Image: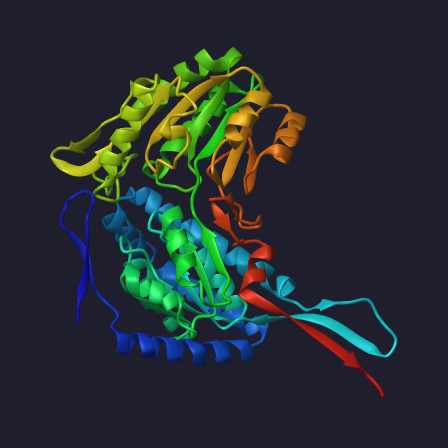
Length: 460
């Protein structure tokens, strides 16, 4: 049996070692998932809600252990990892609260002699492929709605955070449903073969655009829907009437939190020329204030970069921007702290041209790229000039301005005066190369169920 080892991004030591799921074990998992799906489909919605609630209690009982696992696998500061556990519980509870109404039959208007309903039936076995950057949050978006809808889940987590899949599986096992959620670990090639496996009924993937294309290609010979959340190059616009200080505070946090390793992190900021100098002056000290260091230390606010190759990629993005005319104001380098860790400094660049890679590609690092604009229309044009479309934010005191821009912005979520946030009552979705499909909200159950037309003639 082969194993997979994950390094600790701060210490460089082994964070964990997991066994690779071999073919025989994978067959047992898939057969067990099919049986579990049949069992879950027979349960009433109240029973599924109760099951998920018991599993959440088991997960929360190990909150400290889970947070520590996240920190040592991908470097998130421990205080932020604890916050992720809490955020996961919040999403989990919300989906439970709306499940009964969201999954209820749609009853059509009365018609003499007939009963007509649209039933929402489970689809079977869901393969969930979450990302490492928010290893609980990207998993809960699929796991809990899938079980609530009556499906079983096979959970293959990212290679950086394999222990997180085991925490979900253990919670459901301890709640009395040991096969409802199964954790596996296989390499990329076998993951693609699994997507093509007829025993899988639906796939949800969170990751890179490249990874999304690979997963979609693996399903090419099947009539299989694949839900894809593929990240963003998310813009913000600071309008002339924005509250500069509060806008800067929120945008900087939205760019640097989790070392910028967030699909909805602010990556490019367009600032109206009338407030541009004030914005830059206010942003620089906030960016310089981040503290790199041991992610288990409560004073650390900027943890190490998770992937070993990524700091050099971030340096290349900064170099590209400066070569094209941007000014590096702070940061910009890969560093260690006390000889430990693969960190990247919190970075701010100004005057970044639209053709710079930072304005076109997802950096996935603690970099804030700023450019001036002269009007709402110029900001709108540049915000939309991207192949990615996950979130965008408009910072203004004028609701009508925000509404007008929201209608024209080509993004799955448009914020006014907030960013880098997710409300589980709203659908999480992307457009263009940011993917397709929906998780969370009442709409998140749609891809996890099949409509069945109930058309009864009550008397012959």
